[in-house]
Length: 109
Image (cartoon, rainbow, N blue to C red; front, top):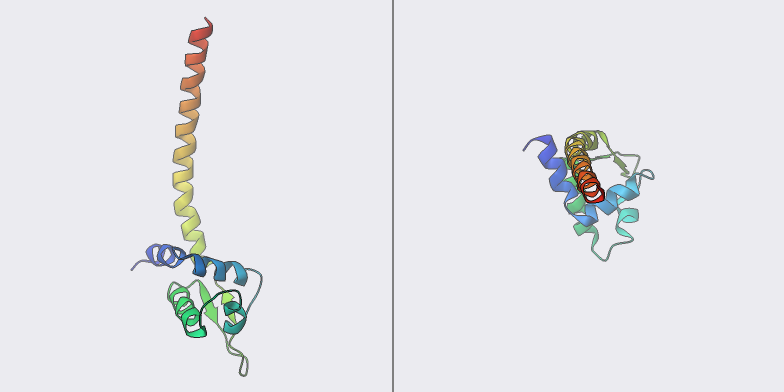
């Protein structure tokens, strides 16, 4: 699977997006990440493995503590891909606005 597909697949789950949002505030342990969710630590660990395979997080090791950190580089590719479509929609909306203005001018003439 290519990086963009892996990233989008990982982002498809709301729990994983919430985990990334939490990690955007700083490194955290699995226990800390699991706290707001009504799920077991093994279930949270599965989500973390998906994020790690998508290269969206990194796990460190400090003595017994294994902090998770956000690795935002793959998000740049997603942002770039989405940007293409934002420009497309802005262009289409601009053309629609021009068309509607022409119609209004025709009614006022």
